[in-house]
Image 1: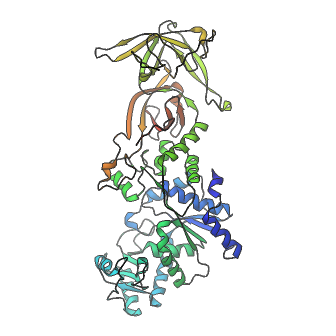
Image 2: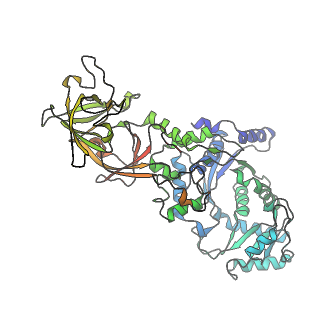
Image 3: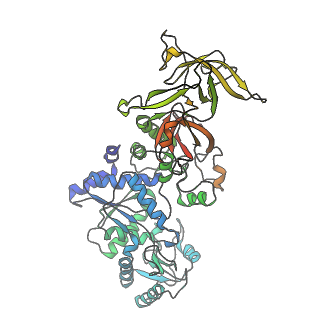
Amino acid sequence: MEEALKMSNFIHDFIDEDLKNGVNTRVQTRFPPEPNGYLHIGHAKAICIDFATAEKYGGICNLRLDDTNPSKEDVEYVDSIMEDIKWLGFNWENCYYASSYFDFIYECAIKLIKKGKAYVDDLTPDEIREYRGTLTEPGKNSPYRDRSVEENLDLFKRMTDGEFPNGAKVLRAKIDMASPNLNMRDPIMYRISHTSHHQTGDKWCVYPMYDFAHPLSDARENVTYSLCSLEFENHRPLYNWFIEEIGFEEPPRQIEFARLNVNYCVTSKRKCLDLVEKGHVAGWDDPRMVTLSGMRRRGYPAEAVKDFIGRVGVSKADSVVDFGLLEACVRDNLNANAPRAMAVLRPLKVIIDNYPEGQSETIDVELHPDHPEMGTRKVTFGREIYVEQDDFMAEPVKKYFRLFPGNEVRLKGAYFVTCTGYEADDDGNVTCLHCTYDPESKGGNSPDGRKVKGTLHWVSKEDSVKATVNIYDRLFKTEKPGSAENLADDLNPDSLTVLEDCLIEGGFKDAKPGDVFQFMRQGYFCVDKDSTPEKLVINRTVDLKSSWSK
């Protein structure tokens, strides 16, 4: 689906026009995440747009870690961001950190102070909000707005030297407190934060705000197109103001696109962190999360995620995409590529009474019906096998074609068997089935041409592997989780079902974390990263067809 990501859209139309008119002669983009959490499905859209746009025009795309807020950032997040980008199949030209530009950004702040375009303010955060005004009422000037250049330079230096505590002072741009755009009402450029930084250590106790650092970092890197989500559209005048006031000769152009909003999902880093810290999920990479690491752990192929992004497309209008489309993309990819296997998740023992005791045989079964080049796998058939509990009914309902007393079914790749009876415990729970088999029906075909309507998967007692299988479903039961006061109220209580003592074909003893399979009649599954040869753990990626209801 790479080509879909490069298809013309309104962003590319802007770029085409610029290249035609000589505004730019090259294309350079960047992906600038803040390392304060793990990337999610929304970031995947931004990654695809940034990298695919640069690739389409023969340009470059850099990775820049926007690490201007050390109190919330961590090297763990930096490493996860890099891993996720590579997983999606993209490679950055250069990797930068906003913190690498701290000296340069600081010099720009000094330049604005000297131009009379910035001042040190002593108002408290609450007072700043009060002075800012509203959408219908203009703000009012801070009483510290008219400090002299000399006084502002002195105070800013003292802020930098660590003389003042956190929150005592800020450096603000001097623009227009009556501007209809609230972002232009003397925004904060620097705040005091006596916090050690994961890159710069304790060198700084003042840190630039995002709206100040971001345009300067773009310009310093010679970015030509700053592609960002629609929420930054109102920030564009401020972006351009900083660029113009500093005086860059080749200013980057900011173009906004609609965010990717998916129903039944939470992508806010704050809410995701809340889920992790309160133990509602097992971590940022919990397979129920729509973080890229969570989807990877669940078994979502990177190509399916990019297919989803390509189908959603690039637009300027906000919309909500159905989570079912993402699942469909995953299902389409795995249906075409995942090898087949048999697994019994809720085992029911079957004894084939007329099969010779002590005998077994090896059966070759195709790995994929549409890809003979994948070859075959070997499964063992014997006198005792296991089928799914749901594949037997003592008293069948209408149109039930699986096992019940007197009925004949086909065992996938093996033989026709007929149920002759069953055993049950004192509570009436069926514990064992008895069957007979037709030796002439090997391979699942009858020599006399008789038809059977039911085909069941199975595993043999002799050659099977025990596994714990996690059946994952959507994490939330409501389309817009988080709209209620308590996010936990929207959680789906059935988002995880753990099945112990499942049985899988014996060949699975060599399965490695990340391996994906289609378990026949069950769905698509992935070996979990915590799986070991001693304890096999399998995650359900998605079922065979959408059966989820609101």
